[in-house]
Image (cartoon, rainbow, N blue to C red; front, top):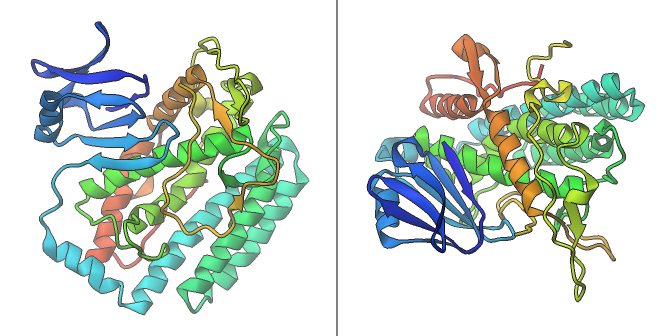
Length: 384
């Protein structure tokens, strides 16, 4: 169970074996410790000493974000004691052939998923540009296979991402004013939601990496740097399209989010921060764009932490201001994201149906097998 707490001024306190989310004398939620896998705190949320001790005793991953969604840090379970596995991870960083093979597999999976989603958009929305960009991405695949360096692979990944986002906007039923990926800060509703979903996804993959006993820092596609979770970001690539991008399409196309759920923050101007009416969360697994099986049947802005190499991301255009999400809409996004992760699909390596949340853990375990030499090649999850 993953819990998100974004009520400003709330406190997390211990009562018996449980944790309570309180504000003033009011109790908002009772959290059963044995069910908790992760707690995500936004902004001004306090944790009492006794609650902190309970969290550490039960090794509950606790993530601290600013009210604006930027990563601050976390309380995590003790590091894996498997020093031999960690030694192997770092030793392989100096193996150019292994690093190239791993980076190529990761990007190949990402590119294949982007092309598949664009072809779905072409069929369902009769959008020629989506088909055109999908074919251009597919044409990069042979070049990727022949890439002689990781820098070349990163270049193909950047080019494919640029092509993908040129057509991604055609997947929306209504015009959402999305023209390109703008991250810092997001200047339209779609970019705002993508940044939020990528942040949520990164935290879940971090948890999966820790379950697998891996060190989250040494990766191959994303260069290693001080404080950068390069492995987490590597494993995130195949799931960006599968989980976050398809969910972003669902949120707008199913009208879970609408234009009045967002506002533009302009300096020195009063903002209308009136909460929008609560709406039920639609079943996002029923949106054709969200299917992985391929069957044809307090206002905040968000950003993924300073972790990823991404030359394709645009800086803030002149005259544009951050687009932010109202509190009630934010809650609907959280609910939809968690619902998405409970959607099941057939996962060939396990020979059975699993949820997206389970597959994140399985893929981290598969990555570990490649590191340890039990598997020859990393096989990303592909959108069908």
